[in-house]
Image 1: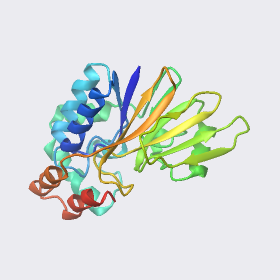
Image 2 (image 1 turned 30 degrees about the vertical axis):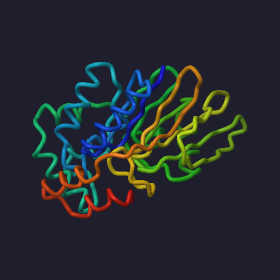
Image 3 (image 1 turned 180 degrees about the horizontal axis):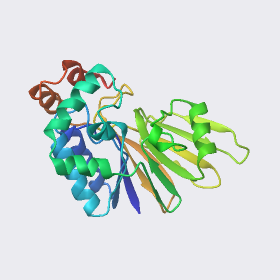
Length: 246
């Protein structure tokens, strides 16, 4: 089975819609959403409603920190993120806010763990920036294969039988074997707010039969996403950074 894994959609309808179409065209049979469905972008309602429909059809979704901030105004954010969350909170319908609040912070499926951030304490939303962070993840959970987001830049960490953690930064869509006995932590890039220097929407496709993971980048209508941010009167910087992928 091929599983499309998406993270950090951030209210970017144009990117989300394009990635879904590309994933289905490449044989994705199941979808996993690793949180932060909202925040930053100008189309949160469409993105939440699409996720609600996907979950009703069997997709897995977990809660990110921006999703949590919708129901928890005390959650600290930087200035521009806070402005976007305040606008998103009043833009969403009650059913949307309830959906986000009810999402779990982690989910497991066979030997796979899905979580927005580092997996030892999912509710803390700790970033995985380096091997030390990945080591904390491996020590704090037992999953053989984990997927997270939050960082907005793709990376892959592996742990051998001796406990040594290695890191790899993917730059192509060539499939990477992630089978046992090694343990793996795959950090997804962002669909709707990339920060790896590539403005294309980042996601990944995992083949459970071959235990192979391919990171992918899909070009989308950035002008449309930027215009949606401007139409919502959100900070201009949130629109401009889409073009830079930073």
